[in-house]
Image 1 (tube, rainbow, N blue to C red):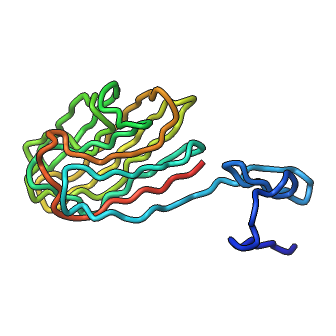
Image 2 (cartoon, rainbow, N blue to C red):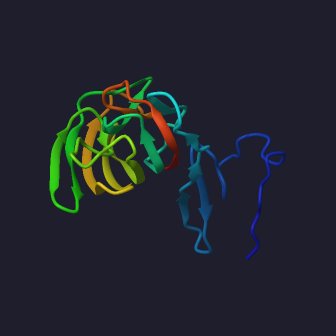
Length: 199
């Protein structure tokens, strides 16, 4: 079975309905003439988390159903926890329902989180040198409602890891993601973040 590859110069206009169409989604037809939507996985450009109090990813298409926020060695100038926030036109900073547990070699600490999807929470084991590694996965449950799952590991020493979950409903279609410090004053000073999105 041959595969047809369309280049940017080939795809001059939106294709009409048929074996391939584009309307925020691609569709394919199998040998049984059954058409199925093909999910797209798009990776944006990684952003260095070496300055500022927030990192934004904007212009996210309205067909997106899942976003994975990735952290590699992200650290800040202080001990303020990090949040992932989403929004439509502007970032939504309230109305999140969920929480997180962090753990170190000696204890567990947990907290309710209402100001974003949790990356970490205030913990006696955290310090300005704490670096975060892992993902926060945001999934559309219906309409403009989203749920999250956080799986984060830390280095060096002190904290070991964190797990959390949350949900929020936006007023309209999601178009942006922000990674920020809770206190709004601690600045990023190491690492990088990126997102994958799919629909």
